[in-house]
Image (tube, rainbow, N blue to C red; front, side, top):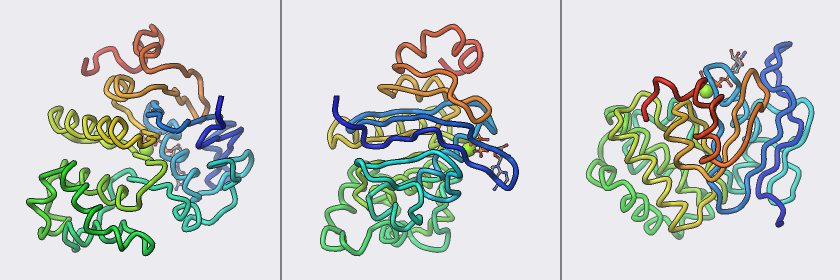
Length: 241
Ligand SMILES: Nc1ncnc2c1ncn2[C@@H]1O[C@H](COP(=O)(O)OP(=O)(O)OP(=O)(O)O)[C@@H](O)[C@H]1O
Ligand SMILES: [Mg+2]
């Protein structure tokens, strides 16, 4: 088996004295869609942010393409082409759609800028129609598309998505998940997805991890976890499926 693209080993992350992650092990291989599901406050966003370097893991190690990145500053991690669409989308509200996309492109990629923007527009035609509109006036679904589009402008080897479905109508969520699947199928993009929408995430994913109180309690293929009675009881019963 080839070495994982991303390897998280025994990671503990603290906010002051409060431990948010307690020895997390996660692996993501090239070409996979892997999701992390769990309840509010489980530590999902903390893991994603720890991978990106802020906050940093207090113990344990994180490696990317075999290189230790645990103590690297955020901008150096980003330079390795790990891109994220953070929780709450964090687009620039006063900038236009096109300007937001420019912010996602690294200087190295400026020569590809036009092609890369066209790719984002092909994936999310709505953004093309609205390219001159300010980010802050977009709908929630459009803002999510923009947040993903901006991350794609970095030409990521690993795309991290924190709750892309949050607060969106089912039809819009379906479109976002289809776009993620398409990127994975057509471009071979590797995706690590954090989701409370367990059903949607597990259906989309090759593999998944369940996080409870800062610890991974279960892992398996998306299909197996979807069928798992404990997962069903905790995350799927009464949910959308
Ligand atoms: N900046 C911070 N300072 C102190 N505690 C924090 C901070 N950010 C998160 N926490 C705490 O760490 C724990 C994990 O939070 P985190 O945001 O990672 O959870 P989550 O699984 O992403 O939850 P949600 O589904 O609500 O987004 C929570 O108890 C939270 O209160
Ligand atoms: Mg979160």
